[in-house]
Image (cartoon, rainbow, N blue to C red; front, side, top):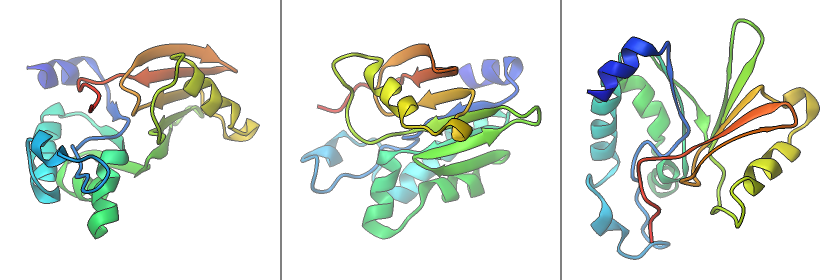
Length: 168
């Protein structure tokens, strides 16, 4: 079981958004037929059951799929998951910062939009837009469904990749 292995070798886990499938009513015709769990309650229940298996602290943000429930019904998936998953900390909708005791910052980001022609282009643009004092030492980016590591402008940037294919 992957969760058991992770818990034995890691001090904590991070998640860069899209913990649930979401619900697109108008923008993606037929999206309802791609869902494994229908509705916010069902998706939160499934996600919380899976995340509880980690048994280590979890720091996470909500992504654009999570935000669909906020738009439809004001339902904040992140707040709900934090209530249900012990030892979890919701850092925010689409971005959040984890500050370590030793003075370093890890930023989680889930920007809108699709990926670009060059894998590092969006990562570089995100970093270029950051102000000097606000820069983290580590930036983890979700949403683009690509895996990347880039050291740019003194930031270790990681596109987290995913286990899900892009929606057609």
